[in-house]
Image (tube, rainbow, N blue to C red; front, side, top):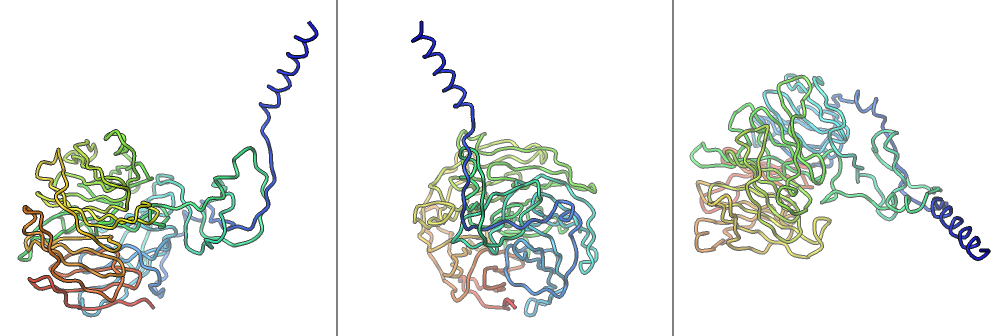
Length: 449
């Protein structure tokens, strides 16, 4: 009896202690977050038209304008009516901005966790006409972060993180709750903000004597962007990658964009991956992820339906396509994938339900790409190795000969319009014309100032 009572008391004591959370106090030197309150964020859109381009992100083209994202800060607008000498028109301050799309004179942009709509009728004095709050995942920026130190605990109730200061930190944590706060959070390629990767939107239209990869909608009222898009207009809807695994669909044309649908692509495919880019060809949406390409039917623009997928090794993955082929660049050795494999993959998508690999081509650090479908020319950004021009006319025989390579600059993404290439990278914006043999001729360079 005494033994049984003692055992019960011991068990009770153990059970009580197991229910208690262990606390610990940790001291370290780290990146301490600086916050902008949500109220301040939602009254922060303004013009700072004298600001110079310093840290370029994505680009979109709209009529005679070039819009260049200043990473996590806002958008520069340039008048490109004379491509030999683009002129700076305005800068729109949008905290946390990474991605943009334009339709019917309205600019849609991420601002940390919010989606904002801006009237572009007077770009030097823009007005916010709509905002949909808390539709993007909470992320932290990488700019001004000292990567020699961990990140201190984030308190999302204080607002959005706009920067850091390195100082000593003392934190009291329960169990393992401190651990995850110490990790430097990143998106797939180190670019954070409302969307993550610097990307653009594209699709295929025809005109000016050659078939060019153009905007996701053939209407002149929509913007033209590149292959790294995370925002994409489909009819009167905006598709936006809202987190690593989810795409949201917004109804446009209202003061505030209205969320009408959302889906998780890899759930439909029965596999898991981090989604990165969007590309539309006719009624098909091609989704690039870090371990494959997925294809959806968007003929009903507010209700996409899964068609098929192609899986590859883990890497950064933008994709473009025509009716016969899809081209995917895979960049490894980064946050996108640990394997040091960098290549271009050409896929057969003539049967949209069964995409298959045709051939591969080695690259250095491939990123964005575009094509002139009528001339069978593919232009691939290869980081500090510049632009590679590739002939895909004989792809039926698995041939992808490189015609030329233009070097001396950093190439992140490229947009093709009116037989001109618009190339963006960390060194600035370059514009090129090109000949039938694929050789590039420089038109202008917009250097950082």
